[in-house]
Image (cartoon, rainbow, N blue to C red; front, side, top):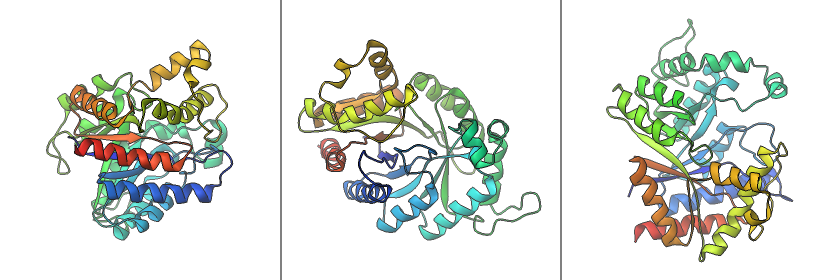
Length: 327
């Protein structure tokens, strides 16, 4: 079976606090480590009441300090929100703190509207267009090169893995050209998954970092003792997607039984499209779903997204997945 990793949005639940959300992420990372998952990635989002991972490098330091073997990383850093120099310093420092355990996944989409762009003091559109050049600059800084006559001592020689992330064909082409591993966000944008995997492999150019293409796909996973319970727990994430797509994002809500049957047909169709890549159900059903995606894509790794309103259900899901795949 291909290695499995975990993607954490550092979800803030209705009625909960950011401090508690960070505690839950640490506890979940410890469960993932104990169960043998390969990586634990945190995603960068800003200005969203239901997601607390905006200060991504700080969150990763907290998780890294509470674990010992699992790789920790950004899945990802939205580079248009930052200068490459600052990210080089942050992740070079993380690599020094947690040698051999740090991943830096880079995305081109800022996920920011005009108000957030102003708050970040960034030209988001221009920065997105410079994304390939900024990735090359980051790679140079980690290699110890001075860029623009300025060195990055914390970044020089950092022991980390750089990844390109994406939900379109652009990221696949860039990762192939630069000879970097590529992760596709099929857990929320599955439309071009198969084409992205094909283009990445066909166009891959070996580099000093990677001799052969290395492809990761995202998948929504939730395992429970019964299929009904799994879909019940998954309804909290479903509600978040509907709220986001209707312009009303908020904190993660309690689950609702038969949620999809109760919502309007357009919302249900949207959910079935954006969350089409999933493995939700009993441990056996989840194992079959994970194996089917691995076979379909030929992925070298899969990364699972599995937020639930009840933290215990989220952690139990990881345990059940690990047990099912071990069998």
